[in-house]
Amino acid sequence: MSENIFCRVIVRDVERLADEAAFRQQLPRVSVERQQKALRFKFPMGRALSLGAALVLDELLQVHGLWEREQHYIIGEHGKPSLAAHPELHFSLSHSGHYVACALSSAEVGIDIQHRVKVNEGVVRRVCSEEEIDWLDALDKDDRGAGFLRLWTLKESWFKAVGTGLTDDYPYFDLTGSFPRLLNKEGIFHFYEFSFAEGRGAVCIPAVDIRPEIVVI
Image 1 (tube, rainbow, N blue to C red):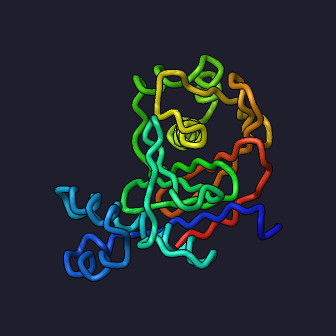
Image 2: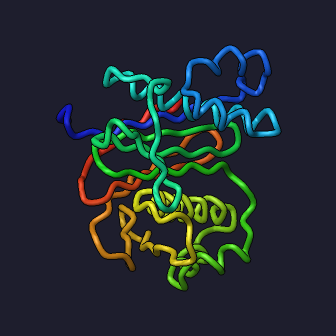
């Protein structure tokens, strides 16, 4: 992979940061903006996830000789953040359970992770197409939850990549082949899927075919 064309992903368990002493020790490592964001959370796990996401972004930025604590952010119209001084770098954050994920890329990128939860059939009917529901219905009962998790991470990674925020205009997928195929959106999007201890995730990269380097810690 060319140094100028890349996508790197880290998924990390940050449960230890829910400990107050560990949280306070690591807090100065990140920017004032991210410190303030983390401190706004009421519960320890929320603070841990917010700080942990910034720490993982910092780790990825250091590959390029940068530090998160020196960065300032621009917030897009629909809430997507970007690095004010480095428009050539794109990042996306996600968290679920006590895991955080960050993707840093030379192209626009979206990432989503989700831990395993019981399927809510009302949500399935609301966000899935008839074809996606047929695909889910064809799965074994024990595989239905994992199937929906796969669909949801693909959908949310797309929303994050295009930067519109979550809307009711959901992307729909054909999962009958070897790779997910987007059916109802214009443009070229590449999707990459992965799993971790408590769930699974997806990365969406518009236009540019970059295979992410994914590390789960």
